[in-house]
Image 1: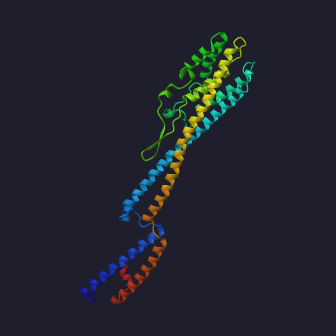
Image 2: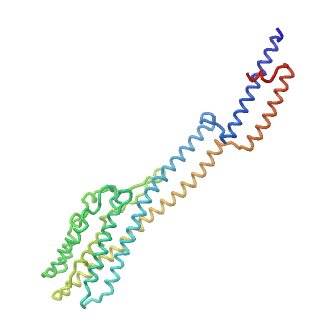
Image 3: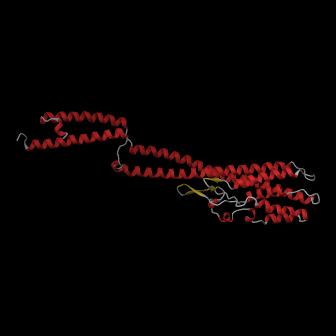
Length: 331
């Protein structure tokens, strides 16, 4: 035999060294091509738990961001709708304030303007986003106003009674006694629950605005009164009492709609702040994930060159000692 037992042992040991160096070489080349320290989480060693924890937190934040952004589409629509409602009532109020009490008003112009404003408000209350009614609270699959003509019809009947001798005070009392159903609202809306969005750990933001809230009903009643009010020279005092009551309802309704819009704005600002903080935190987490998972390509490239020199030197040393070809260690 040309090789002794001792030489066979040395050859075996040298083969292990070469295979280990080649394994490290392949690993470094893989890191450079992928930019990652490992191809699986398990190969990260002690960094596995940290990486999985960071990714879980990142995904959780992404879930909150998705929920908030979906809700923002609804709140955008709600804000626009309430702004338009307020503007409509404010425009009518300006026209009503221009009327001098005691004379004979051009009621036809006011009635027409009031009817147009009423139609817009009723339409806005039934606003939808992605098929959901934004003023329907948690019954957003059901239309808030099932009959957009009922309020004007029922209030018109009450207003007309003043022309047959019913006092303005009695007419106002009768209008106040009208139920939500008699104003055209869906009866399910009264028992509807709040709309909440989970925006962060243990944090829900309430963005509920119901279509049957008092500010909207005041605007509907005031506009319906004006849209159905006729001047009767036989009952001028009663006419002006009803006229001023309609104006008062519009003034209060407009102010309260602005107030509700402002309250919704607080919730919207909270959502916007959370969007920014969640996105900022995600950037930090991305950096932390990179620190755990990604390699410094420049550093690995330098190490690769060093390893290649080491492998070449090892091959040369082994060949000199054993007089064997390098190919023998690659089989």
